[in-house]
Length: 102
Image (cartoon, rainbow, N blue to C red; front, side, top):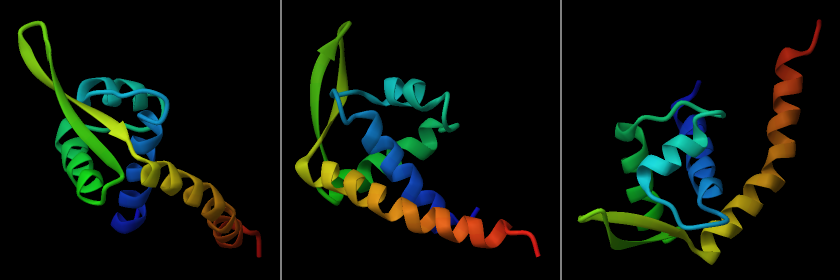
């Protein structure tokens, strides 16, 4: 799969995983597992990129004596999910064109 396309899809997947409640890295990986295989080495750069783009915010809290980073979606992150939903029709059209029978 084209790396840019996959990157965009994974970004939206991560945003969707935290859309309804704040979450942390390991939980995000578990939540996405039925849909997409995502490793920690892939997830954390995505989270940093989304934070830099102000699509999510990060806060820390102690959990079992350790500091855990939690991620919260921003209004801009929610808007990005909505944009993706609108773009999806175009992606499906392109796919349909590519796989059509000659």
